[in-house]
Length: 276
Image (cartoon, rainbow, N blue to C red; front, side, top):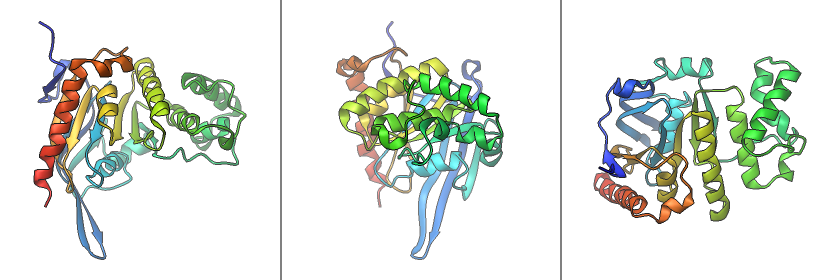
């Protein structure tokens, strides 16, 4: 029997023998502001397993980026539990367990691409030759071989974002956290980078948590899609997909793809019933 392209998922700790990379239990986060408390996240239960590509999707302000930042120890939860590789986000950051790709490339204009990519390695005290070797490896991985001596202003927006991905990968973290990295790019470039990112994920076997506002992007990239409600962010649905790892953009025209996209859209609509 052919498996359904989308199904609900009830995670188990030892499912298939896969290791849990990120786990949250009743995670909530409230910001204290001059105008009063802002409840960003409410009782988030989430498990991300090794090798997953998990997309967080929801309306603007629903807490997608806040959840990503909590995983990265850039925000602290006010209730509940969160672990990354079985330790606190703070310890995971000290252990360099993850790389983070921001919405903008955040490249230093006075450093060439090679020196931007290897900045984390420079901070870690790695030798110049080791840094150069790593730069060559990861620039080739993101299809930027030969651009190491260029400066950010000499590259297109898509190339700059690929350089920022190479920087996040250069110290070989297991987990890659990506905060809507292609949101500011035009559709043609975005489609191309989606394909490249999928190929990169397949080659490196990294675990990815990816924030997006785009339903087609979430469905195309993900092994699982986490649909979130408006603030305070809650998980409305978790959808697991069965598309092949070597899929191309052509999959977006298939009935299976459209079925998953429809379920994501329905989840987003249902989530607005929580909007007070």
